[in-house]
Length: 447
Image 1 (cartoon, rainbow, N blue to C red):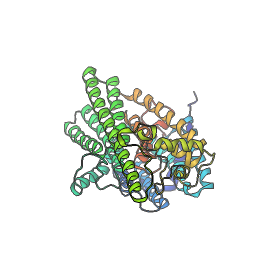
Image 2 (tube, helix red, strand yellow):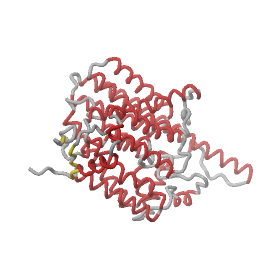
Image 3 (cartoon, rainbow, N blue to C red):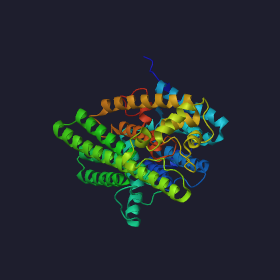
Image 4 (cartoon, rainbow, N blue to C red):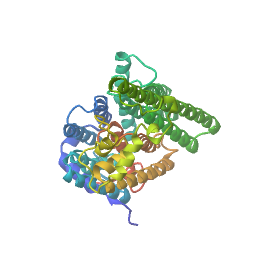
């Protein structure tokens, strides 16, 4: 019977020939270390808000990605069959991003590694045992973010309330992105420790998850809190559906957590909106007293809510993007049409949405392909979990990070090859590229 999918063996063979002796030098036990370096690099530049040129940042990320693939190879020849849908959508999406880069060169630096480098990583990681790979990635996520959290608490006093705690990071949103990655990873590791009866490991990673979740709450990032609620919900439902003996208790805990996060999210939203109302009115009063300009802004208590208020101006940006779609994108990620229309001055806002960001930067064809690829990845992540839920404590890993990517991506532009969320999301979905999801490794080729 002919196996479905695209055979990725040639990719592995070409990779082995190119690396040659390096496969013998780099021990596969160094995978966690190389992943720690890669994700730590992403966290560092999230913390610093990318101070160097984007192309240089991507170049160093590609070098670290090469170390990941070198240390991931086990030395055993394997045959990987890629899923046709995943592969086709991937190459169509990032091929379109390269086409956009031919018109606007700024997009080539991130589209090329996505088009070429990550499929090699998928081949290598899909030839390994999934459990070992997931464990290495999740540990790297926890230990890459943890030093920055400790550094923040040592150097910057904790503040509670608007505009949110940012620690040593550029802003609170940057800190929240790292926190949600660490929280999701630590929760998965804690659950695995519990399943494997490793109490000390379970307690340690549970404490790490709690630290990251509390820090995330202090940032007052609504996208981060939404992602946290989504991840907790998905993991709890997955546990209940797959292994729970006392589902009522877990459902009760889940309901309480969701309710608390919902109340917190609503309160944060209303506080931010009212703060913006007060700032607008104060500026209008200042212009009246200084320049004699009429006050056209209502008092804060007289304002009514709008979609722009609820989304911190994002709704207006998204509608402007839809009104200015092109097939090949735009030169800059700054939505200039919205800036001109809104009179935002120096507020050079990007799309603040992963999907609208690709649509605006690279064209509506690329935007549609990203939505299609993401939907297929989620579908296959659900199937992967259901097939392996009883035999593997890490089976929910791709599903959890699909949720993180989508929920944060609704409000932040996180689809980039080496953003901390984008990179982690891509790494954990490598097994989803296998045509046969029932397997947890590729076919070994007999010598």
